[in-house]
Amino acid sequence: MPRRDDAAFADFATARFAALHRSAYLIVADEQLAQDLVQEALAKTYVALPRLREVGNLEAYARRVVATTAITWFRRKGWNNETATEHLPDLVGPAPTEEVAQREWLWQALRELPIRQRTAIVLRYYEDLTEAQTAHAMGCATGTVKSQVSAGLRTLRKRLGDDVALVAELEGASA
Image (cartoon, rainbow, N blue to C red):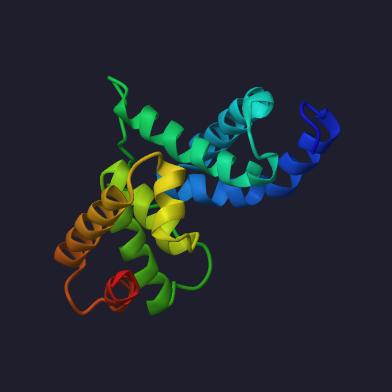
């Protein structure tokens, strides 16, 4: 992609928006906020195009901007990361299966993790990035990724119990 090629960047943004949005949603746990995050990340990526040494890594750069922007948002004073959970909406249709209930249980526990731990776990296991790629995306050292993932998994284990298969799988994958 030539530098500042508007059509090529528009094609990239269209093709990768859904993948970036999925990651952003898992990090910030809010549909609208995730859309805003991806929009801002794509705008920052577009502005940075002339400075990028390797434009072939555009998606990795955009993913890093998503992660670092989310972390910055959560650090802002006055950020209120609360979601209403006291009253659940009425379900339309059949009751969820046990698998869906367990996924929701895990998802809720993941949303309660601090932003850096959640970001490290999402990038490492959902996006299936290596520790080095996760560190690059988060703008930190590999050791920081390891410690954030370890702390996040430890917290999930405490909240969900040792018998949760997914936490055990994640721990096995990080070894």
